[in-house]
Amino acid sequence: MTSAHLSARREVRRQTRALVNRHHDVAVHLARVHASLQLKGIEPVQGALADLFGSFGETSSALKAAALQLAAPRLGSRTARLFEVWVAGPPLPRITPLATRWSLMVSPSADTPTRSRRCSPDDSRTLAAQFLVACDAQEAGAQEAFLHHCLTCQDRLAFMLARRELLKRHGSLPAEWVEVQTAFQDESSHT
Image (tube, rainbow, N blue to C red):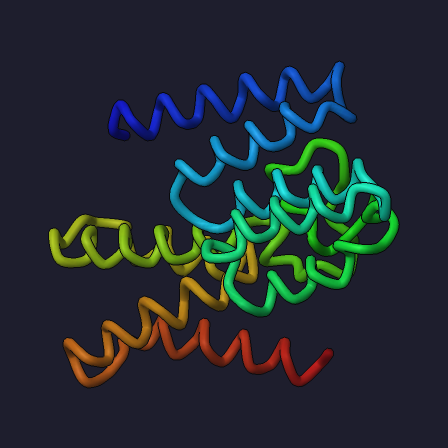
């Protein structure tokens, strides 16, 4: 990790600790959103924004709109639209699909996909990239560990990202990959 990343993580943690005692402090919420924007990925920003939206209601619509405008480029259009609905409304419920593992004031709901509760899309992309590096280095056990993660955490995103790259490189997949793909398909057909 770079020193800038570590510094940003420390600042997010500092603002999160401050939020415990001052959960209606606008400055703390905004500082936490700003700090989370210094981290890579969507999940930290979404978690901080969900906490802000969970702490303020319709009387704070200008605050929520400003925070959303700040975070929207990182969130992506679909997630930004989900937050947009709450700008002029009441606080987010304490249990919401908009919360992430980085949220403190609100919690992810049970209807959040299992994979998302266990690892975020950011984690999935990182794991797939790390696996491909390990694969290139021919690290023993890398494939087994990666496929085990994918099945255990139902991480279809990591699997599909790595699978696509392996197919580009080699044209076919080892039997273990076909087995995992079949397991995912069988599971999908049972739900």
